[in-house]
Image 1 (tube, rainbow, N blue to C red):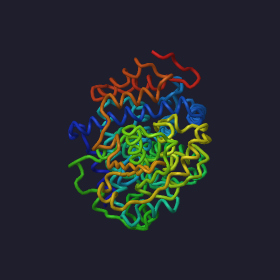
Image 2: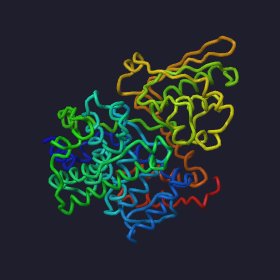
Image 3: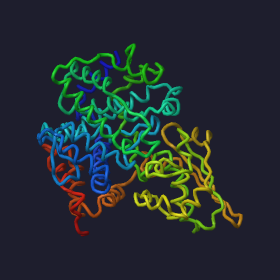
Image 4: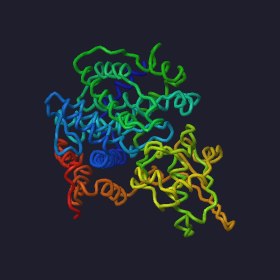
Length: 469
């Protein structure tokens, strides 16, 4: 009974079980998620729209904070909907490379909403986050390689959302202290609620962002229904009509779900993104940026850029880019802006850049290919990339990156993590408050509740920018 064993483990997990490295990673994930959410809530219309929706349709119940909304609160499930949409809102969510899942948009908003609602302490939140990541990653890793990646994605399944509903439910259930029976039911309810598909990516629609909101909102619902004794299936993963049969053709390894639970923690396998785009593009973009800086290359002098990378679906190699969403899933666009602008930040993914004539011309000089040898060398634990730049004068430069910045083998240091946060929230959060948020998060395990963090992160308002300090 794999689902039951997962429920037993989640219910019994204790903060005291966790090594310092796991606790620190959980804190880093919280800080990074909050920065990404504030950015979307303040700077993107879909963030503003979902905040308004969650506020208006919260039943007048001020349970949990809507991030970047001027301090508004709403029903916990609606706060999770809004904050998850913001966390997923600009391709800044962390990634588990071996499974292509994006944990923090799917997990943290549910845990934060219920931790705030129930006034749970910081240690309880850390437990919940670690449990959510563990369940999320194990369910994904158990899917057979024959189904993982292209086979599921080519059917239009948005795997991070499908699996994230279970991960979010583990975190939500843990933070409110569900016993084993109720946790099992919550997982069963999560299985009934799960969903997510790729059409929003294809069209550049806002539902691409909403995937990260619906998932933690469903998780809150599943956990609260389980708490009230709403009976869910007890075998939602491994059952005859369970998750693995429905979404993975029944091809999975049940032992992966439970073997070695508690011996190490999957949250430490994820990377925090440096670049606001699909993670498979990071290594090649970083390699190109390195070449440009080291050799003083000018984009006008480049004849061709060849890129080798881990290609999940054809949309990652497309040259016809008409929306910001499609740009964030295009290797030719990513390398073109890196060459033309010398950086790959949120500023490169604006509507005006999509029509930049220099960028459009450079896109046509980028060619992509899958490189099995490169991928084998890095393994499933990374998404490597290599670029070869050929200049008009015949010179050629090659650079490869196996582990891009933010990967566990090439992590951001504290200064880099803070700089990312401050860059994302500039104009809406003062440097003083950025430092206060960091200090509160890094001392999360001493906090009696998370209200001070949520108050600071809820205070920014898209219509009320702050002066630079």
